[in-house]
Length: 148
Image (tube, rainbow, N blue to C red; front, side):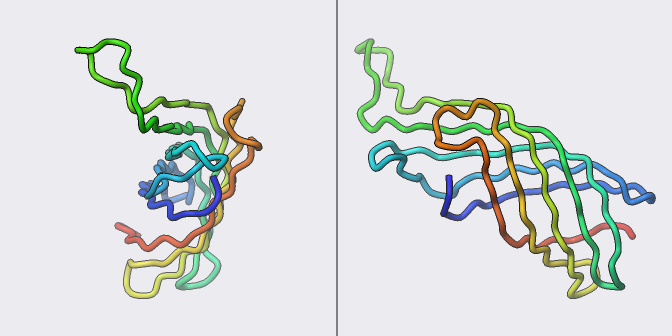
């Protein structure tokens, strides 16, 4: 699952004690090719417990861990047309449980807008389609904080 661009969306709620919940969804923007012949696209989604800490006035850290799922769509260019009038199946999917851990450092560059370099580790249970159960994703988020 390495390489490519993974757009993502995150919602996070923090209590005044800096503990909270985080929900995240990421997917590969374009199809990838597995073993040189099989087109596929992965989707990652998870729900996490979050601990946030402040390092300085404009810098804080987010540390999270949780569970979720990985769904991989495998595309079949030729379809599976068993019934002439029933249409063709052009993809198959595979879904697995995953465990997630991640960390990011928020830098508030203007008012409540921030940039957050982040790293994520996923352990996909029984990931038989790929060579490893471990996935890593790094990137940078740009976001906005409501409230304090």
